Length: 313
Image (cartoon, rainbow, N blue to C red; front, side):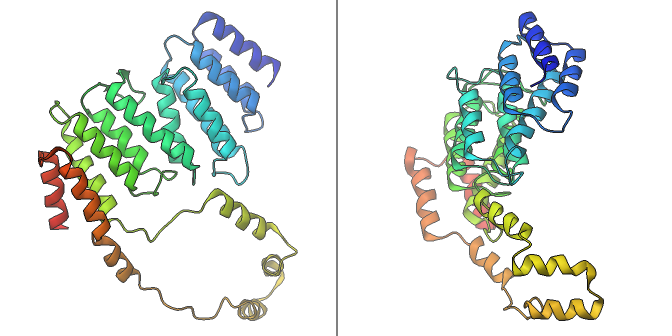
C-alpha cells in the first residue's frame, strides 16, 4: 500500500465521508499495476465501516476493488481461494450483521464474477441474503429498497442474481439448498404484499431445481489449477505438442494431431437423452417437495402455482 493511498484513506476515515475526487485518487493509487494487495483490501473495508453515508461512486469503487482482490488475487484467476473466502466472510460478519448494503452487493458480485467459490462462501451468501431479505432495511445499490417481512422487486433481483450466479452451487441453475431457501422465504412472507415478480421467481427457481439438467458442471478451483499447470508445463507431451504448433506446416500438423489421438472419433454423447432424463422429477425430489408442501398441512397459492408449472413441464 502506497503512502498516498494510506493518506487518502486516513483523511476520509477522519471525515466519515469520501468525495468523488478522493475516490478517483484512491483508484489511481490502488491500481497502478492492475492489482489490489491485501493491505489495500483491508484498508478499503475499514474505510467502508467509517463512511456514514456511502455514495454511489464509493459503492462502485468498493465492490470493484474488492471483487478484483477476492476473485483474481490468487491463481488460477477467477477461482476464489479458501483463504480469500474466509477473509470476506470474517470482514462482513465482524459485527454480527451486514453493516451496509454495499457489503451485500459485494458478496453477490463475487458469486457472479467467480468461476467457482468455496462451499463456505456459497452457504454464507445464502444465509446473508435470507437475513437481508427478511430483516434488512434501506436502499439497495441498484435501486429499490430492502423491506423486511415482504418481497419487493429489488429483493427478487438480489435473489435471482445470487442463485443463478456463475459461482453459486449450480452455475446458471438452482441447487437444493437454494430451493429450500426459496421455500423458507415464501413461508415467511406468505401473506405479505409481495412484488408480482416473486411468484414467478419462486416457481421458476424451485422448478429449475426439480427439473434442471445438470449436464454442464463447473470446474473446482483445484481442478482448474491442475489443468492450467498442465497446459503451462512445456515438458509434458501435450505441452510440447502445442509448443510445436506454430512451427509445423499443415501436413505435419495433421500428422501431429493424429499422433496424440485428437483425430480419433469419440463415442457420441446422447445430450438430448441426458437432458430429458434429468428434466423428469425423481422419486427423491418428489419426496423432498411433498415434505415441504405438507409441512403446514395446506397448499398455498404459490405451491399451487409450482405444482401447475411442474405438471405442464
